[in-house]
Amino acid sequence: MKQPPETDIRKTLGIGATRSRARRRRWIIGAGVALLLLIAAVTIWRMKADRNALTYITRPATRGDLVVTVTATGNLAATNEVMVGSELSGIIKTVEVDYNDPVEKGQPLARLDDIKFRAAVMKSRAALASARARLEEAGATRVETEKRLARYRKTRAMTGGKLPSVEELETAEAALARAVAAVGVARAAIDEADAQRVEDEANLARTIIYSPVNGIVLNRDVDPGQTVAASLQAPVLFTLAEDLRRMELQVDVDEADVGQVKEGQSAEFTVDAYPDLTFRAGITQLRFGAQDTDGVVTYTAIMNVDNPDLLLRPGMTATADITVERRTDALLVPNAALHFTPPQPKTSQRRGLMGAILPRPPHSRKPRAGSDETPDARQVWVLKDGRPVPVPVTVDATDGSLTAVTGGALNAGQALVVDAVGEAS
Image 1 (cartoon, helix red, strand yellow):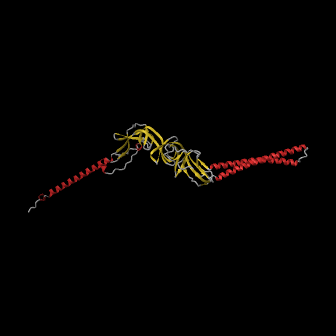
Image 2 (cartoon, rainbow, N blue to C red):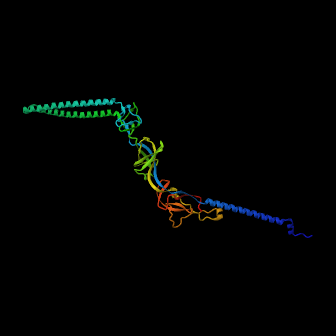
Image 3 (spheres, rainbow, N blue to C red):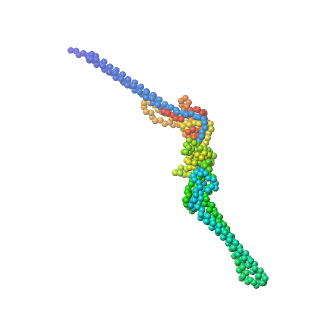
């Protein structure tokens, strides 16, 4: 029996058609997967391109006043602060004033027990009277010896030199010399006694402690009954401020800022007691002497402060802003605009879809030959057709946030690039 051809058998069983349909199905599935991959790659590439697009942040140039200040801290003090003490040792008998009391020049502040000082005055006055009496006695003795010597000389002349004897005449002459010397000693004793009297009377007067100035009592360090010992130095009993309506502010200026600070400059300061108030001051002295505190070098500046309402008190801590420069109606640019540099474009990267999928090689930008770009070039960048364009400027004073500039084709209100977000392509 003749066998049917194999082709006829496959057709009869449908085997060839089944395989053809399977191949077509696999091809369709593969094409669909490839299409999906292509769509995903394009989507990723576009998202990455959008993400890498640069967005420039700008701030406008403005016109206005610029004030450059230097900040320093210090303490308030009375313009003339007087320490009042006692030259004498003794017991405080009374205290006439208290804290915050106004005082006038010559007003008694306290009194020492003066019994021993009064006794010393009485003793010195008695010694003076005694010395004066001894002077009168010495004077009478001198007159007596002068007359005796005169009689001796007259008798000797009348007797032809026979009487009195030479020895008696010489004794009378020596007695007169001693009498004259005794008068001199008595006079010196009077001067000495009088000097002691003056000293004792001055000490008696010092038992009353007077105010040397018109002012106010800042501090009182003595009470009645307290013993004052003035053996080596006068103890401080009272601290007086001459006039608290005129005070001074002593601030420490950092060595980095002292070159900008000068006498005659104005300042504004605040104190913790009145945080909402601002007080004015003027620099009257900038001392050359340096102060080194833990390696920090500062210089003391003295400022005059008006205090008509007596709000400020000695010892208050103040923070002062010293005006070192001022520019009126100046063109001002943000400091960030002066420091901005456009991102460098990556020119050697692979482009297109494959470049988006595959990683890019690292790239470094080198300055072009003959370029006038320098690290210290002062310029700002403005946007022109969406791209930053440099504008050269000359910088002037700065307050740390804004800088006054001159020159260039820059106008107030013009947008300046201060930052860029994204990645340059």
